[in-house]
Amino acid sequence: MKFNFSHPDVREFLYSGGFGLERETLRVDGNGRLSQIAHPFGDDPHISRDFCENQVEIITPPTGSPREAVASLLALHRKASEKLCSLPTGEEVLWPFSNPPFITGEDEIPIANFRGGQSEKTVYREYLARKYGKKKMLFCGIHCNFSFHESLLQAGFEESGMETFRAYKDSVYLTLAQRLVEYGWLIVWLTAASPVSDLSLFEKGNDGSRYASPRCGDLGYWNDFVPVLQYGSITDYTDSIWRYIKEGAIVSPSELYYPIRLKPKGENRLDHLRTSGVNHIELRMLDVNPLTPAGIFEEDIAFIQLLILWLMSLEESELDETAQKKAVNNIKNAALYDEESIFIENNGERKPIREAAAEVLRHMRDFFRSVDAPDEVFAILDDQRRKIDDARNRYAVKIREQYGEHFSAKGLALAKQYAEAD
Figure (cartoon, helix red, strand yellow):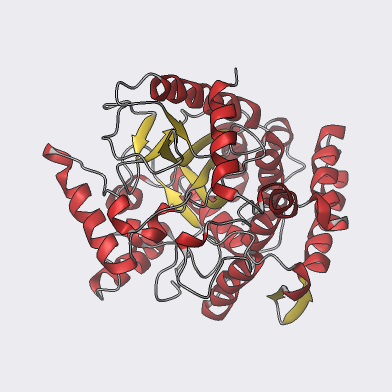
């Protein structure tokens, strides 16, 4: 499955699409310790909770561009910060890193307390705590949701020869999901922003210094097996996830810790995905970046969109079991800090990550030249290329330089600064 980039409607809507962001972030008190008070935002659909009671999840509505998505995230961040600054129990702020501040132990991590008809969410989180430990659940990230413009998909459907638009649309997203898994290492390496940790997060003998992103590396959100998914149809895809549930490897689709997810419109259930089809794709491998109040740069979202478009220009290929396992290993390796020790394995070749990344960027540049892309596209590619050409431009290097000492104290000062920003 690939797009016909010469089709006029594909060209017209190529850089359009839907964008949504979900940012996880911890609430901390004025001393930089994890908040111990209940979630103060009620049932606000845009400011919810994740694993623990003090882990806020800020959810933007769908927007039409990376710029609008970041603006929406910032507006919700300000709204949450204003509420936290005026709590009767004392001022709180939102922690600006993926890695948590100093913690005394798991007793400081209260599981999210859902009640009534949502009480099963708490039961599920208690299960996760027993199986994986609470500390791992403190890692925070940003999920980026993307959908193609419907007019672009409609143009592709008309040329596809497929019987229904639903079948074509599912096929497009299934193809994209495979390719994003295969090339997810590039996104991790270019956006990793968690090279500094408090020693209280790890067991003795591990200070986290090997990682640019522990949550994307082997310390983070992974199952004790490497999932192998089927992408032939949405039925094949959902059946391959159900298989792990039936075998007892996981208890819920949500427990499949995988960097890419296909999502239906509305309630996120696997049976709903199977019956109603794919609405958008979710990328789950982005760190909270402390170099910006939003936690993510507009330019990185724009680059992800360009990567997606390039991936949809590639010839048909199948990501078999061996390739899927190598792809996951590539993602974990890309989360390491020392780029000299990172190698990417793909199509029987093993390359240093800088060489592999430069090659992808070259292919992307050639592709966008072929479709007469505007100058802004090449500026976005140049921005990422600078990280490849000079390691000092990588977020992880900048952040370790700025926050490598006195992490918790500097993190609290930054959280307060961002809480007061307009």
